[in-house]
Length: 149
Image (cartoon, rainbow, N blue to C red; front, side):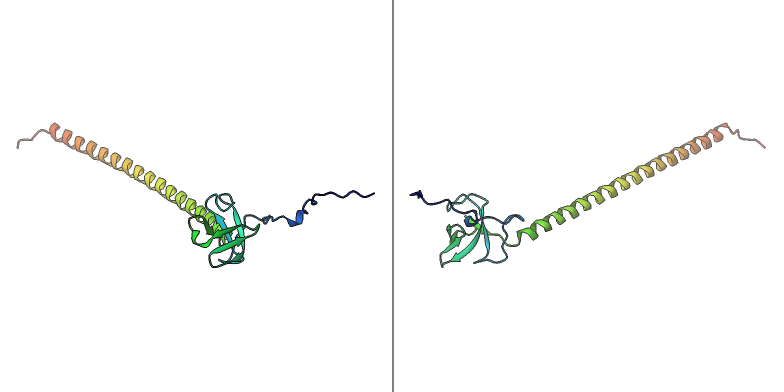
């Protein structure tokens, strides 16, 4: 005797929509095959969720999983994600070059300040030597007695 369940069997794991394991979804085009990111918790999606576009009508975009969103909500409810992986890499390169520029500027500033301090010390020593020379010169004149001939 074989028992049959009245309920449907569990779905196979292959039937579930899964994201790519290499990172977040990224699209290359706007339209079918592209990827959008939700800006707000709308349309049955959570904020930040990325979905691949599988269909399009004049007013709606259809995503994997059967969800839809109005096209005229672009910018307020969702946005296109195009080449975000390259953008992230570019941002990291830009940040690294900016940090290198800051480090170089700080090093140059420290060197300039060290040179200015060394110059101030030299000027102070020179002024002290000039003042001492003037004192010696004045002292010699005061001590010299005029000779009468």
